[in-house]
Length: 104
Image 1: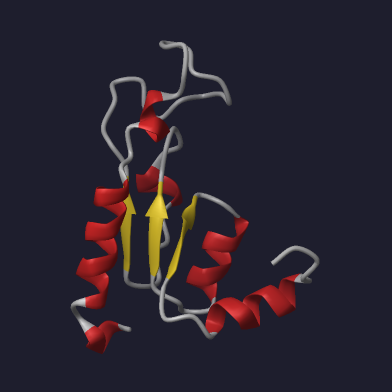
Image 2: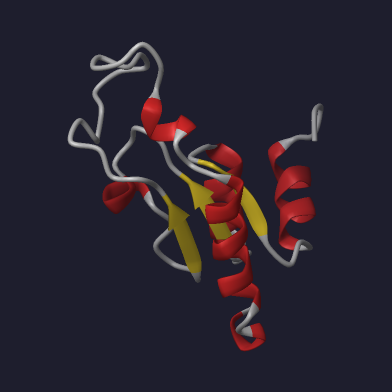
């Protein structure tokens, strides 16, 4: 996807059955073009910044310090909020979305 302009990236994502990614520009672009989303969240506020106009699943583990105000973990040596998200959690969210083909 490197080197693509936003309209080209939007068309690529529009053709996808599902988009999996972190809280980022391409994730919100996927939501904007109507592609179902599995959103992997770490420190930011998923209730505020989640995709709102399409079917989606947010994968985020609860921590008292979440949402975090910065780019560096203030309570641990590493960002446990994102490091705690497992492949199994993401896979379960994907399966849940794909189980309902009427929404895809």
